[in-house]
Amino acid sequence: MNAIEKINNRLEKGYHICVGLDSDINKIPVHLRSEDDAILKFNKGIIESTCDLAAAFKINFAFYEKEGASGMKLLARTLELIPNDILVIGDAKRGDIGNTSQMYAQSLFEHFGLDASTLSPYMGHDSLSPFIDYAKNIHFILALTSNPGSHDFEKLELTSGKKVYQEVISKVSTWNKSKNLGIVFGATNLDELKDNIQNFEDLFILLPGVGAQGGDLEGIVRTFKEHSNNNYIINVSRALIYADSSEKFAQVSRTVLENYNRTINDV
Image (cartoon, rainbow, N blue to C red; front, side, top):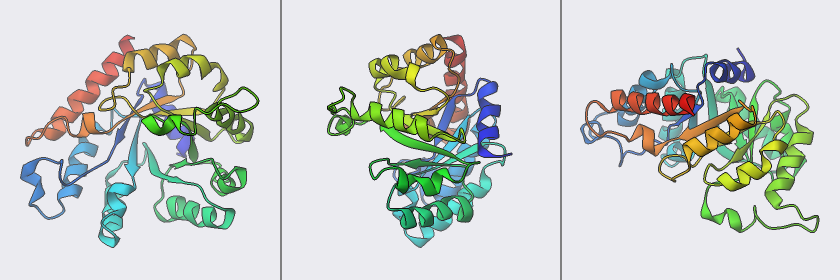
């Protein structure tokens, strides 16, 4: 099953929540912190309790890279815990000149065996083409992000009258020859979502910003449903994986995910 088949299978079941494994030793339950392989045990609990109800998992590389070689080994061991039938996104936000991007792409897809990537578009098509050429993988390209700094560049107006993020969406749509591209569109930008969703065409949409960042889950889902667009996944990290700090943390995370799924289906 390739990446596109994996995500379509989950979307068809009505699963739209991506579980973000932003695992931090300072935030996991206290009873785990002193144990060997504490983060791995935490990840195992979250993965096993949510994998049948989630649309995808997202591995934020920063939370593993910070530990150097041991962190990258932890990342690899975490990937081994995730069932093969669910999409796994390598959230590393790559984007560099062609030969460097080629090495990054080989790392994500051939070494780690990930299904999807997150990419920065600001060095242009040639910086992304080594990823795009992995046609059976999905590539989410930053368009409009959920952080306050999105105003610095993404929302600047071009001489054409378009905002920078709108030009990114337009370009990504023209590059989507293999139907394997998506965009990152922050869930905190509900008004912009309503204004631009008609331009998403058949792109996959990854929406961070629901949960701790305060994105309007019901508003987001309603907008996609009103436009008969089912190609979206909503990333939730902190509000889901740190929902409980007791020995029942995994079961509580599952309950939180069930509640998100119920809300999405009820909209």
